[in-house]
Length: 299
Image (cartoon, rainbow, N blue to C red; front, side, top):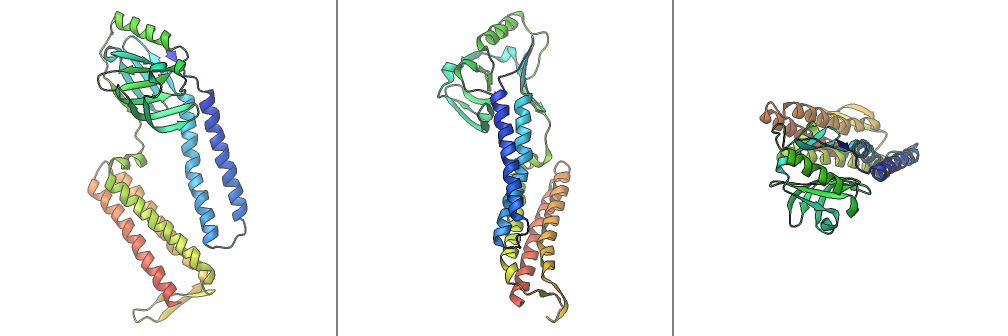
């Protein structure tokens, strides 16, 4: 038996958020058109980049709301969300908590908007819980508890589902299944399991964003021609247009991207190599920061 939770409100909210991000991004791009490089235009561009990052993320979550479903058979309740599955053996389910009893007892963090609640938290008096629900209405909420974890879901007729599960429990399982969570692991999110690596990635990215911001700030005051290279004795041996100074933070961003790619590639094979790549990214940002500051001071 397969059940779909009420999902119209959650999907419409997600689509509305995605459309709002698209409209805001488009309006900012129009405002950026023809604006000379400055700290103001850099700030607008940074907002656009952040919105372009959020756009696929919210689209992904919206698809998750649409794809959420529950399957019940003789052996288990299986919760399916995008590429993830939570398998709950019916033999491990020891109690049911209905929506009216859940009111005010749920503590939750994760994807959380109108009609969509997926993540982890706690149910007071029950313990740790995972949430795969599209409603907070008491008449549509159901919490299944095991010795290790609680599972909060939403269905149109919780009482009917409880009766169905109890009937299947009485019949007994046809085979043993494990209480597990399975699914795809996306490499960019796997760094979250390595706090040190994630800190290095974020620090290098902050350095690079600050580098672009600093160049944007000083750019209007720079002369049209800049000394771009010096001999070991401090003499200028190459002069070029000031627009070429933008290559420096761009090269730093390319180095950050390349080192992140190779670091993720090495994540499962050689952790030391991963940390060397991420450390090299930090070093590149620092070196280019020094180069730009020396250039601006000499001007």
